[in-house]
Structures are given as C-alpha cells and as structure tokens.
Image 1 (cartoon, rainbow, N blue to C red):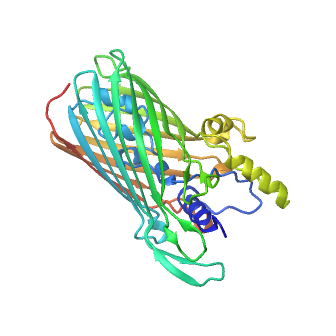
Image 2 (cartoon, helix red, strand yellow):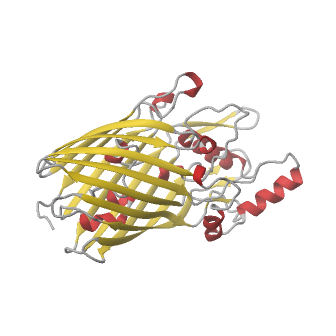
Image 3 (cartoon, rainbow, N blue to C red):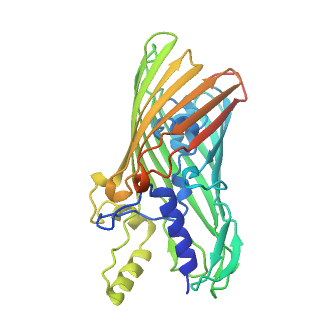
Length: 384
C-alpha cells in the first residue's frame, strides 16, 4: 500500500523515542508525531545531567545545539565537543545510538562561527509485508549538519542563526510493497537570543529564546502530498547563577519547550471524513502549522515540556548536576530525574550523565539507564 511502510516506520520510531510509558486505552493521549524525531533527543551529556536543561545556562562547546546566542559568551576562543548516547538501552536495544559533535571558533570578542553534526543509528530492522513474510533487513540512519554565525549586540545581549541540512534514510528502493522509497531530505534554520546578566562577581540572571528546526517538510517517496512535518520547536530558558565565592558557584535553571507542530486530526471512524481531515492536515503549509500548533484544540499549558536543573561548580574544574524533566500525560507522560558530573581542565573536559530509572512493569520508563558521555577539547588556551 502506497506510503504504508514509510508511515509505519516513522510512526513506530517516533513512538519508541518519544513515548516513554505504555498508556491505558482509556487515557486521552495527543502525542505529536513528526519525522526525524532524533532532532528532539538531548545530544550532550552536560544538559542530560540537568533534565535536558541548556537554553540559558552558562555557555560551553555544546551551546550551538541549544541556543546559538550563547556562543559569543563562551570563555575559550575555540572548542570542540563530542558526545555519545546509547539509546533505549532499557528496552534491550544495543545497536541504537546518537553520536554528535559541536564546535565553534570566535572571530573576535563579538562574533563567532559554529557547526554541529548529529548521526542517529536505528540499528538493524527486519522488514516484512502485510502477511508477515520476511522481505529484507535494513539499517536505517539519520543525520543533520549545520553551520551558524553568532554575534553580540551589546555587552549583555547576543543573537545567532544557523542553517541545517537533514537527511533521513529509513529505507530505500522497492522493498516488496510496490512503492519506491528514497532518503528524505530537507533544510531548516535555528535562531537564538541570549542575555548574559552576570555582574562582576559572577552572579546574576541569564535568559534565552531559541527557535529550532524551522524548515520544510520531509518525504520518503516522490509523492509531494505524502510529506511529514519536522520537529520545529520554541524554547524559553531562564537561569540564575550564584557565585558563592571564588571557588564555588551554583546555577539553577528552567527551560520550557513547545513543539510548533499541530496535533493530527483524531479518527472519527468514518473513512471519507478521516481521509478528508488527514488530507487537509498534510496539505497545511509549514508556517501555517507553526501558528496552528497554538490553536489545534489542545491545552497550551499541556503542550509545553519543562526541564528544571541545578549545577554546582567547584573552582570551574569539578561539576555536579541534577535535574528533572516533565511532560504532560496527554503528550507522552515523560517524567524522569537525571544526574551528572563533569571535569574540566585547561585543554579538555569530560561530562557524563545518567537517566535515573523510574516506574515498574508497564509504567517503567524505557529511557531509564540511559548514559550520555561527552568530551570537550579546548583548541586554544586563549580567552576572549
């Protein structure tokens, strides 16, 4: 059936990554499904240790993943970060992982260029037809590559932007369904604003606004009408830094994130009605979909995800972190604690985070026991 295999793959992966708990059928669940959901996975270990908090925290080499406006305030002239996340280990999947890399170079005291790369391996998947006959096995993968530029507008305020290329190779060719599939490709943009409000003692309030993955739909066939939205997102962040003394600093923060993708129409059971509603949904323009996400019949407050976290730093060398992530029950019900630690030297740094197991039986979070590992290399000891 045309588009069926592709839709099943995208939906299955979306639910596997973004829905941590099995829900009773009586629950009202309005999960927003998108293509390339790997773009929603927290890519770095530092943020992972604080409940995926990073929009307005102190800037570092991974800032380009979260808020490009932070980069001009990084202390080092240039750095590269490499991160690795074995994904869904609690479900027994050993060949699914996210690898990411980010780097920046400060052109002067006010401007910087940056780049990030994400590669997601979905492991080995055995394909079958509608009768259960084995077709062949595939190794789907996805990646995204972007380049950005950031600049200070004042001593405290900066902005940044980036263009991203996204490639999603779920399955290609004719796999026995009569439909020829191809890799999906699209382009997106990120925009970020960051206010660095620390005083001379190193204490103060920072805030940030981040718009990510603002781009076109992505399709896996030559049918222009059979395309899916990518996970456009709006993030708001706030952090307070308290420099206790020269050696001790503690940071508290909160991030709010909202997908700029509307909920798909609910099935009515009437084929003609459902077909018309789905066709209207899929034909919606990208910019229209961003606006529609605020008025698609769902509660605005329930559509936001929240991350709260804390980071303690000793002598800017040793770091201890903790955080909590919250998602409304109607949007997937992800709720989890995370912890992390880090070490920073003049030329390199190490970060590690751990997602604390939660629930039991059918309520056990399949993201439990996820460990992120990150390395940071400072390419220059010079500071701006």
